[in-house]
Length: 215
Image (cartoon, rainbow, N blue to C red; front, top):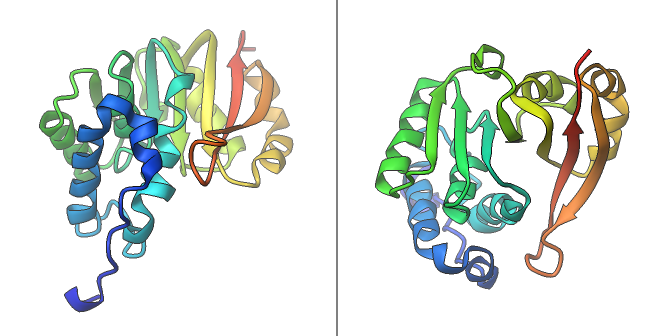
């Protein structure tokens, strides 16, 4: 794709200021950095610039009120949702778990440039996590199907903690297909929630579940 055919970056939607409040400035800086360097660094595809805010940043940020304590983001990639959530919720401690070196480098750079003292970047696959079930919650976005994702995320969460996983329209079918894993990891109150209705044009869909005693 030549410079002449690079699609324009989406203008900041009015909802961004509502979602981020007094954290809008670092959100803008992150959006600019991702728009300028995301494709060349293999973080986003060439067609994502025209929907960078609505499809990616706001989709991630709108779920920020669901978290507290110390939260992991498995497969953080470009920082969607982890960096965005860390911007929106400086009162929460975020652990960004990502195995790919070039993505880890990006996450570390953005942590420094945005002054995100509430972020820890861990280069590892989720299954290599050494600290045990110590997190209050774990989130993930665009990683894998629920039946694969539950075994990667639930072992990181303390008993009584929560999974908050961003999903698409097929979330109910994914829950049905993951019943074995739901039982195996003692998940309860498994449900699909729409977040951001009336705030953003496209609400985010999450699968939420409480992590119980493992068998």
